[in-house]
Length: 100
Image 1 (cartoon, helix red, strand yellow):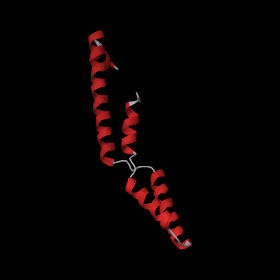
Image 2 (tube, rainbow, N blue to C red):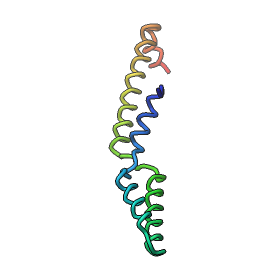
Image 3 (cartoon, rainbow, N blue to C red):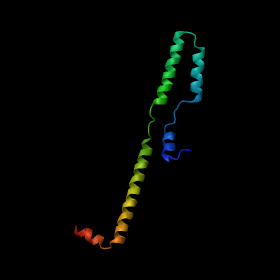
Image 4 (tube, helix red, strand yellow):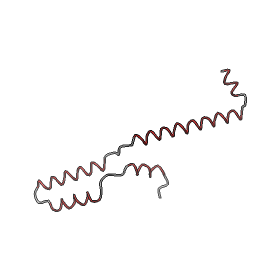
């Protein structure tokens, strides 16, 4: 069991677009290839599949924008809570800060 929740999120983003049918099709073509030209076509298809598996996934700009907004909102909330805590600990803090 993976205890890191971010690993699940990253693995969901890195889902390859290659299906099992693609791999089976290429394997079948490789078995049935009779000439060197057919075999070279199959090898190029295999290279394309491998390149697609190794390529990095494209991150959605919408997800990045939403994450940025969430970080800003959480930062504002934490800042407000810290300011409120300082006000509770030192009620004259606001007047002291105005004098600075």
